[in-house]
Image (tube, rainbow, N blue to C red):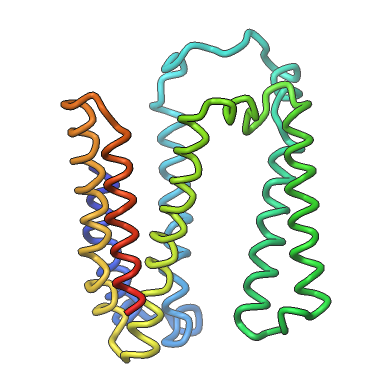
Length: 230
């Protein structure tokens, strides 16, 4: 319900604050006001983390091992986390520099970032093979259901995140609408995704089948993307 509520009011409220949010001298000005939409997440996130530390039960799930203290810390997959983050940053930088015409696609820095991303992702896979408790256990991909679901999730999120990021830019930069209006325009998409997920979960519970539903949802999304290209 928290996610549903955030999708319902978040885009429009964020746009409204960008257009009409309070100004605080030189700290929050007309030109920097939109950035405070992101800064607001910091105090809210801190409050949530404190609430987790206080109220989240320690025995909410079965312990996966009996290690504690430094022995438990040593089992954390720090190399995998660092390699994954570094590879993702390099990939994003390379794609951003190349696509925004900051640099040409054949510029040395763009090629270097993309090559570094490939090397770091390869190193991440190798690190996961030898980690005691890997971030991403590679054995999971031997399960065909998991592998296909992971691929479909990747494709789906490429569409959804791309739309959520691109549509407000298009609406404001090309069509000239306000931030408030652009937030209101994409609200039906975010709300429908929540409703669709709820209905899909209900359908799987009732019919005990997920493959047909997954295929149908992929077809619907593909048709939607084709319509958006027009």
